[in-house]
Image (cartoon, rainbow, N blue to C red; front, top):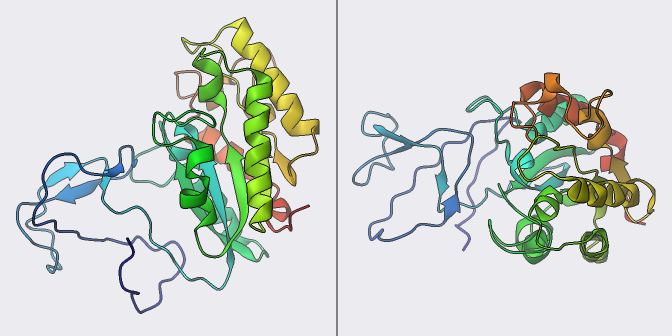
Length: 278
């Protein structure tokens, strides 16, 4: 459901506060569980109030609102990913997810691509529903339906691999190929990011690592993507390439810290985001 258009202009990087009142709220609410940002709740309808006096409780989730569609003069990139894109283990309320760092780089760059839409969902997979619909099943709703999108930035796969559900490299590659084909059919180009190291995470084992290596070889050299961001190369330790560099690791060995998030964004070739599909 879309609201009426809202008039007015907003400068880049504006923090937008949206107040919602549901008169008949009951039962579970749709939302985004891991916002990495603080929101405030209240009893009763206080949506027209400019002050915060009645908004006394806090939550780390976003409810009801899925997206704000901005009609910008520049093109946008959509980051389609899992908890790393969602920003888990980055600093709450400071906008230090890797797509945030990428957006800041783009604002300073001479590029027609400026906006970055973060469509990361913690636990999300390419192939199977679970933590939200799979990347394949939500591609149209969460990515291709957004206005002004020029580039899809695909960074998913580790949850498929570490789940040990029998997913092979061939299965995951087939999923990537479908996403690329559908994005190209919609006139978007696709940047693929390699799957980062996760040795030390409880679900890591040599079999999962073998799948990750095969998948990454396809992403780098398969020629299916319009461009590649090698996040594996950025994050891995030179002393144990199957493990994340401790300086970039938040401590759970799969999610980067703020420094790792920035290193990922800094590794993206901004020219690759301003492209046309092959």
